[in-house]
Image 1 (cartoon, rainbow, N blue to C red):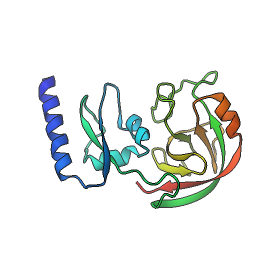
Image 2 (cartoon, helix red, strand yellow):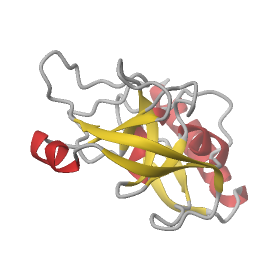
Image 3 (cartoon, rainbow, N blue to C red):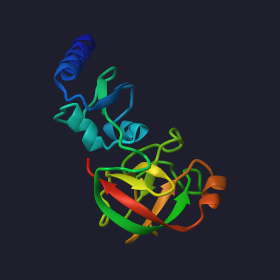
Image 4 (cartoon, one colour):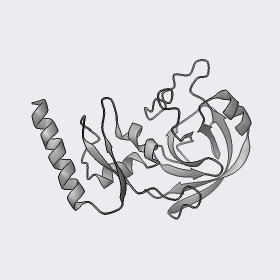
Length: 178
């Protein structure tokens, strides 16, 4: 049964490769426990964009499934901007006292300390959105926080030293089209 599923996945991936738009920049082979939401930030894309690029009907992935990664936008001058905000940004880590390291969208930041993830007020920026943050780059809106209300964000960084260096600052945040 597993071989049939894998063969089916490979056939789907192969047919997707042949008929997909030429906008993909790389491929990713799914490993155990990965989801669209855990893969997307590794490539600075949204889960929605991954799903669309690979013509997936559901969010279900299979081990060894090959996903096409949509082409990245420029990290310094994104051209596909949907909306621009002026926000106050602070930084957070996954290792604070009482923190699980798991974001609201299920990303494990302790296992993936290089991910670019921000905490947002989902009434302002929807969870799962791709954003560009001045001084931080392209990230995924993958978390929320008790103090994150209105035009405030938290940027995820891998340690306290970087968080202290970031401090609190006004930044431009651009919500990108997926």
